Image (tube, rainbow over the protein chains, first blue to last red):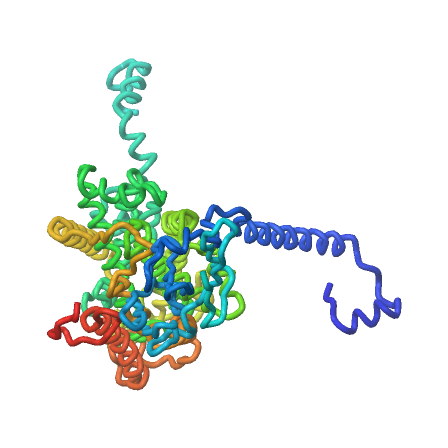
Length: 163
Length: 434
């Protein structure tokens, strides 16, 4: 039994016969099958997204400001460069903005070994495929006098903390 | 039952008959055809054996020519079998745990008997499979074998090529060495560069925000279960479709030689139909034509298959005895190796990715290449030049394809031999600064 415009018009005018039992249950059955498959597919898709992650925190304690030497310190685990210029601190990410490799510190900038991006000492892109400058993270003094970096909070270039 | 009469006692005779036919009845319940020294049993072998029935009973002489197929499709299938066997064996000693995976690799290399050999065979087999599948794709294009009625099988073939690449990609992450770690990092960040869905794709692949335990487990399950199952289903369709599309492509005049002897031509009786009723439209293929240019698959195709599988196994085994698969240092998120290179078959991609925003080289360019490959048989619909290498009727198509293939190879050669620290360009004879 085809459902065309003509038939719908006839149905609306009440001239067409009501839906037969066979069509009704047929449509019901097929809809039920397709719907349940769709729901199962959606549930399976959602299943693949974990709700609890066992990953390191994005808030990192660095220790006392005095423990850092003047200049640059590379922290391997959180992949950060901590810059100390007398009493002022800023933190630049060591993760290349292109495809996530760890950049290397040169005397006056950074180099990415994977695809050849070059950055200046502030993280600005000098050449290569990197789309954005290296990220700067917020750094604060905790009440106990320790430096804390918030990797989830990006800050403007030139941000610094006097400590 | 003559024997019963001869022995006088029917009961004893039956018993003896029962005993003497004992092993034979088991054999006959399994193998239903006789020894294939006659045409009937050669046919029965194909009908009755589930493994052999992917082969036709008779095969075109053109399809058997090494110069036409170069055996590439068969080699790809055989490599899948070798990789399945070696892979399953490796699974007995490998645990996909970030704390153990690398140590298990070292154990396989230095502690487990024949572990090094199996790992080498698995790695080199995988490299060879990528090469063979790509060459097979080239062969099918350059002989015009994707043309009607084989369009859909070309599509399945392209999907199999992609599955092969994904199997390699997920496979070389498992050792959890530096190559593995940085390949995961770069690969999932390419996914992240996709528009809108990027972050979701990366979260889905990694099972989180960082490359860690969830990521290793996900790539392991993809490598040992999801992708092989996909490959098996696609291969089943691929092989089945070869049969349904009338075997491998060949020139029309090769199927029925142009000038058969008059006595060889089967002349149609006008009162008969010569149809396979309810199975095929039209008359049977041989009507009004000479004898077709085919031979029995047993022994001609079967023996070639066995010979190829022996040579392939020998080559991989000997190569693996002498050359060890590389294993880099333990994964270290703090230190990216310099230069950091993907395996050779992804260096073309890495080259493209190094040119600009990753979305161009990593998503759009490969996406267009795959889309282009998939659409080839639906765009080029001419039926000319089927079953011939570099047909003069397909000059443009062949030229374009050769340019594409050569460009891929050049990108791979540049990536392998001419990229140094920081992905800088160096001639092979130029020293690297460090």
